Length: 310
Image (cartoon, rainbow, N blue to C red; front, side):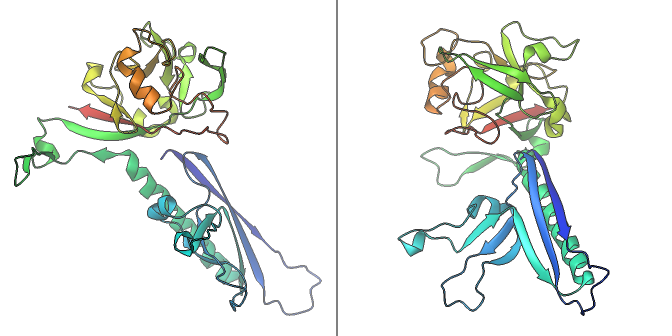
C-alpha cells in the first residue's frame, strides 16, 4: 500500500468557571488517509442485542494488517447469522476516559499502533523472492532450485505494488480513449508523458508514465536494470507483455498509446485479451468508469512489478 494515515484528536477542555469535580474526559480521534492507505483503522464489536448490558458498539483495537483485509467497513447484516461479521472498521473512535493522564496514554498507544499498521501494510510493497521451486505432475517431492536470494542467478528480486490510478482528473471520449485533463504531479499513479521530467528519454509510443517521484518504494529502485523486458509486470496475477501495453526504461515505467483494447488493433492483440478479461476496456491502466479517488469504478486492478536487480 502507498500513502499516509493522518490522525486528528479532539479534546474537551475544562471551562475555567467549572465548580464541580470533573470525572469525564472525552477523546475523539478521526483518521483520514491518502493514496491506498485505509482510513477505517478502528475495529468495533457490534452490539449483539437490545438486551446487551453495554448498549453501544465497543471499540476493541486499532486494526492489524490482517484486519484491514478481513473485517468489513461499516456494520454488516445478513439473514444468515453465520455470514454476519460481529466486527467492523470505522475511521472515527469516541472514548470517555477518566483523567488527562489516561487520555495521553490512550492517544500514545493508538498512534503507536497506527504506525505499526502502516509499516506492516508497506511490507506488502517490498516482497523479495527467497526461493524458486519447480513442480511437475510426476514429482513426488518438489525440487527447490534455489535456496536463498543469494543464489538466484546472482540477481536480487523485489515485488512492488503500483498505484493503478491517474494522477489527476481523467476523461474518456466516446471511443473509449482515455486521457488526463488536469494532471497533478503531487499524486501517486500515472501522468501523461507531456509531464515527464526534462531530460528523460520517453519511448515514442508512450502515453502515460508512472509517477515514481510520489512513490518512494519504487523511486528507491531507480535506475531500473536494463533491458526493461527483464522485469515482469502483472495485472491481477496475469503477466503483461513488454512492448505491447507497457515499456520499462532505466528512467521509469511507461504505459503505451494504443487503440482501446475492445478492438482487434495489432498493437494490442498481445495484451488485449488479458486486459479485457480484467475489465480494463480502455487504453489506460485504470478502468473506464473510474471517476476519482472517491469513486474508483466497478473494477479495481492490482498491478505488481517483479523487479530484478543486480
